[in-house]
Length: 286
Figure (cartoon, rainbow, N blue to C red):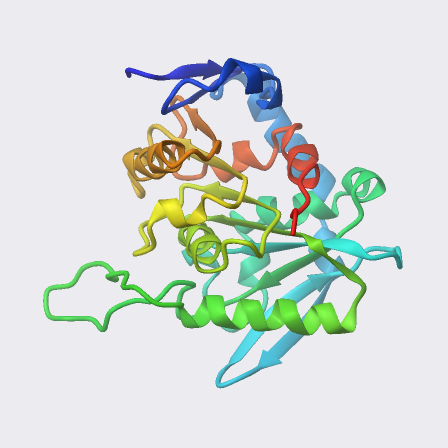
């Protein structure tokens, strides 16, 4: 593909990076995406993160509707970062559990791993929605997929309310609030960074599905985007087009596309050794 640039075991699509900025590009874990080496890294994460979900407190936020959420609290008292994780469609519901289970284990637990908490202590917020993160049009006859439409989604709105409420309750650092999500949650990341362009210090998106937001409206937020080139659920072109739009607007997002990886790209993304240090290296300027 024209304009593709090799980056470790993955590929970055879009314009070739400015050589003066190449040192800022994180290195990927060694081994091809489908290698035994990478599979071992993923299995090691599963073993090391087992049981961390029990460290997340059960909570709810009451607004015009009630949003369940889980909260991980660090063993520290100084003003600390907050990581907000938006689950995929498999986490939908009201049981306040599915957003931490199945594929969502990677995006929620990586920040709570003891070795990461030792270096980067932070709070972790995992809200749960039963109506998506973005705004959708009412279903019409013949619709097979929800149709995104402009405007702040109800799920996103309550997430912002929860962030504000937690900021009043805990010593959060307002310059270090981070956002991550996968699939449906990835579209939520694009949506929130477009709707609140100066709220988040950095964002991580995995195979984000369609939203009605312009990619260029997310240009204020540093983004590392991940997609598998064999994804049958969300076409890789969805990410490629967003990244191209951001770069055309002067932003410098990182985009990693793994050869041979399907929709479960989060297993590779959240086990990249460079991801957590990259996220916490960012601090909002204003």
